[in-house]
Amino acid sequence: MNKVLRCTVLSALFATSMAATVLAAPFQLPVAISTPSVDQINIAGYGDSIQSADVRFTINEDGSVGDVEVVKSSGVTALDEALVEKISTWRFNPATDSNGNPVASSKTEYIDFRN
Image (cartoon, rainbow, N blue to C red; front, side):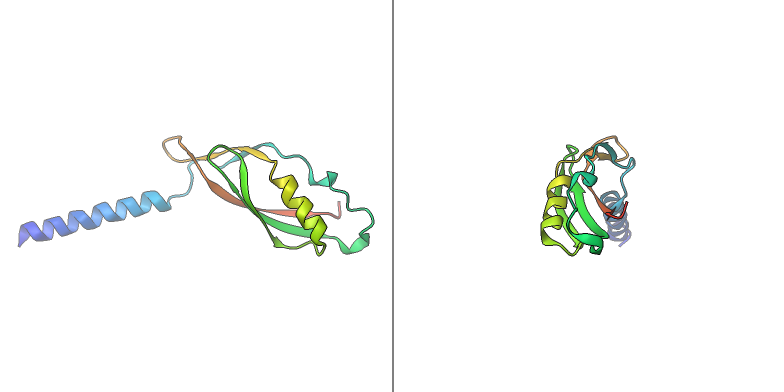
């Protein structure tokens, strides 16, 4: 019985440590190295109705950006599409785990068009 209990406890500890490893936050956050300005997107002609948008994206292990998604629209489909296209060109030094290995991470960016 002692052997069974010991194996069960060891299995539980191993599973817990593996789950903690998978769920752990990156040791080092990603750092932007090339983020061409969204100010270059032409918003002239849309009037004062354009104020902001929120965009969520993944920073891949190689520092490229993928899975770009507008989570709060600017209200103009063409502008949202241009924003997705521009952010897709951004590059980062990726996040790293505690061993220094690059890992994918996600980020949500608030874009203010009023500036």
